[in-house]
Length: 80
Image (tube, rainbow, N blue to C red; front, side):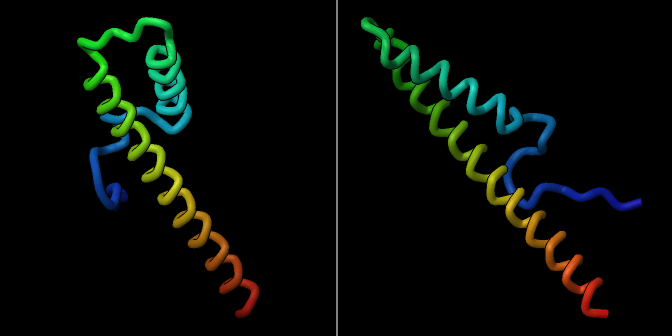
């Protein structure tokens, strides 16, 4: 039995899904846009936001690759 591994980065079990990452990004943005953002945690929140953006980009890229594979397979099926 073969299982597919992610092409790069941590496994799906250790990072949030796309929707959860977006929700956390929105929460961080609200914190940073507040009247008195906590300067002591500012750098760590910005770093977390950057990590979440990378997760979202990776998930979008992977979804695009999967869609291309499915479309390609469907086109191959109709050509034969």
